[in-house]
Image 1 (cartoon, helix red, strand yellow):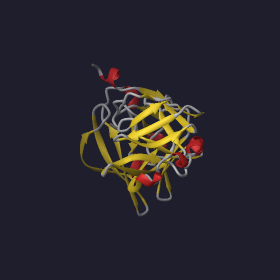
Image 2 (spheres, helix red, strand yellow):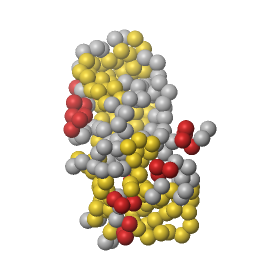
Image 3 (cartoon, helix red, strand yellow):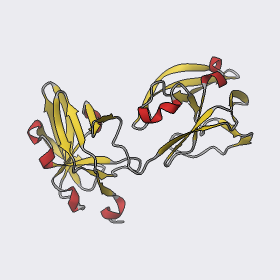
Image 4 (cartoon, rainbow, N blue to C red):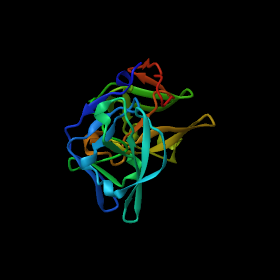
Length: 247
């Protein structure tokens, strides 16, 4: 399989900015979206839109998720430090003379004037949140943990349907908060709970967004169980457990 078959590249119409410390390191309306990994894209910035004077080459080079070998850079903005790389002689010519700023080493990212989190948002991913009166009943080890006709069903491209339920319809007495926190570029930061039934604890089986991003406000304060790890009955029909990276 050729590199052009393996790596997808698309233009991005959004203005994208990356901020480190108090400095805007990149500001571009001509970034490319490159799918270095299957799940989400990475921004490749034209060198003309990057503050290259803030970049210092590091010794050596190494493989990158993208085609070819990558030159590595330290990004310094005042006392703040980040990382970047640039592909050397890529097989895809449109990636020449472009830099990647390592996402989690920057302090802030913006698409237009909205701050975004975790990774670049995929233009092919859609999130729909729909109210539903269908009965959702959830069992863990044969014990009913939730039973609701007031769910919000979340449909996200490439993932199984998720059933967010009001806490009033959930046996919260069987849930224990954990330290785990994750983040989603479409929903925000999630906290987790473990479930204990029949003397057995199932860690981080439940999650919820107390203060989700504006586009996902309809699931605020609700909780969701991993379809992959619990028995979910929809209108009393047991749903097949999906096989995903979360299983």
